[in-house]
Image (cartoon, rainbow, N blue to C red; front, side):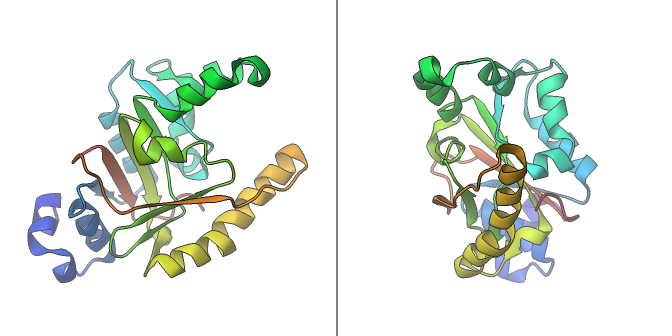
Length: 208
């Protein structure tokens, strides 16, 4: 089913749960692309980002699973901010680093959950990616596996506490020897500017 067909039917008339979420997102001015596999998700994202574009991406298991982190940083096709940020001094360049990550031309990432009625729910310890998602970035592209679809916001918060946060905490503990915190949650209901945010919904499970 094409995006226009799903939108024309309306969310309540679409039987496929992934297509139904896609239709709900589109009704909120968020573009949605439905694909089956991780490889298709990677190709869909790369088709949206022009060569040479300034791109920022947070640490994301989803982007790793679909093979995007290496492509974004190592291919040389894009002006990736992560390598530049890794060479900067947080003590003397913190202001510049904050501004770079808050308002890139493109920000790529994922969310912890998406509700059946099309609310995207992201969680963070520092909130470093959330400002870009909410308003700062020129374009937002989010890759979301179908296992992240939940009935409502209450279920989204449960998924954050029981699935996403334990995974992230284990990653931080292994890398830094300390625990992270669940400090900030962003709910994106829609977009004022149509097309600013695109969600690539993947039928196969990708990410956590």
